[in-house]
Length: 124
Image (spheres, rainbow, N blue to C red):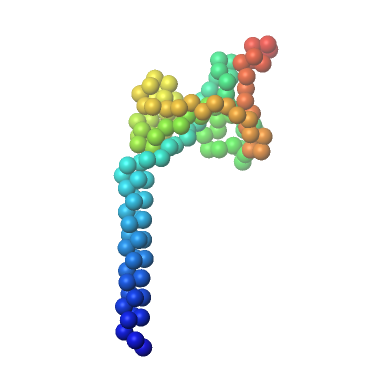
């Protein structure tokens, strides 16, 4: 077997190995160190005062662990999540302690989410 083939395959394996290490390092840097991604959190909501997402939690299997049937969603940066007390970001988002973006309510009938409206609450 000619010596040139072994040398070329070794360089190819080294290139793949170095590429994998660079990918692992970049992923670690952006997701663990810099935390450059967003969380979406659900907090309690009063449908008589504001527009809220609504879902039926009468069957606990169809409801997430937080058990919220009336809620609103906020998007926040992962590095700010540590400032939420007991993983509840309602007070931190509403007081402006951390930068949160309110996600407007959109109905998603496939997963059973509806929007409450202030007009329907006021007419009742």
